[in-house]
Amino acid sequence: MFSKATMKERRQYYREEWSEKDLPDFIKNGIKKREFGFDHNGRGPNDRYKTFKGTESLRKFLRYKAPFAAYISVAFYNEPRRRQDWQKAEYIFDVDAKDIPIRSCNCDSVCEICLGEALEIVNSLIDTLESDLGLDNIHLIYSGRGYHIRILDEEMMLANSELRSEVLKYVAGAEVPKSQFINTDISNKAFNFEHFSIPIGYSKIFTNKMKYNVQHLTGQEDIDGINPKLMKDILKARHHLDNDEWGYFKKDIGPRRYKNLVEAMARVNLATIDAKVSIDLKRILRLPSSLHSKVSMKCMEVKNRETFDPFKEAVPKFVYERSD
Image (cartoon, rainbow, N blue to C red; front, side, top):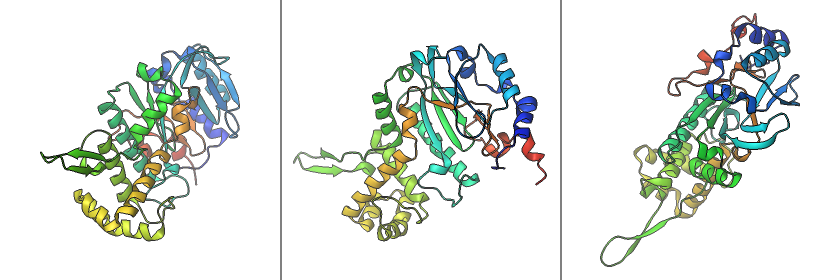
């Protein structure tokens, strides 16, 4: 597992295992308006501007070519072969396990641990998209080394790059919440309420993500704004967060260094997601049902994100037949 698929294995997969039933409905519907791209030799998707009239013609192509990788556009075009007359585009969150800034493992690529943590992250993102933004046409795709959240709510599919960027920063917790000065008594004395004191809205999103990050630190991370001494003190004080005792945690860190930590966590939150993918209106992504040949795993739709296990559901048959 996680080794490169040979041409023989790719042919076996597309001839014996691939099925159009594994294509999600959101791919089948409007397939004529999508651009397809293919990588035939592992050097990148240089075979672009492909189109298909339906799933049968796609099946024949995959069976004949057995590509190293297959991609489909997030955008819908009236002329997909030329990528002209753009209509709309899915809104994407791309979380790759190997690129997560804070992860509990020390693997060189991906493993069961970081893939599990990537799923935790995307589940949190989806919860925010649903509860805070009211989006409900959301599909989760296991990409082979991480996850793609593909959003087809019409208001987001028609959104420009600027709006997509703002939504990304909100959902990801990529900006430090502003402290709020609130008058709490008749003397008009104002108190400074920090992010962890406000249990609703964006402050809650940021606090939850910062807590997750701090609790998953190993101490080996190289994070801009956190020097070795601060890292050591964070690890020593983080037990306070088990009971959400943020005041004690901040006191142990110190006000000035806590500010550095908060700013660093905002940058980490943004780096957890590939922002370029989220704002790109013409991006191509791995085709669900296709083979990720670099790691010999299936790219597939996640039906149940609470129980999904890629090591049980996304392993091609040929992997079990390998002799080594």
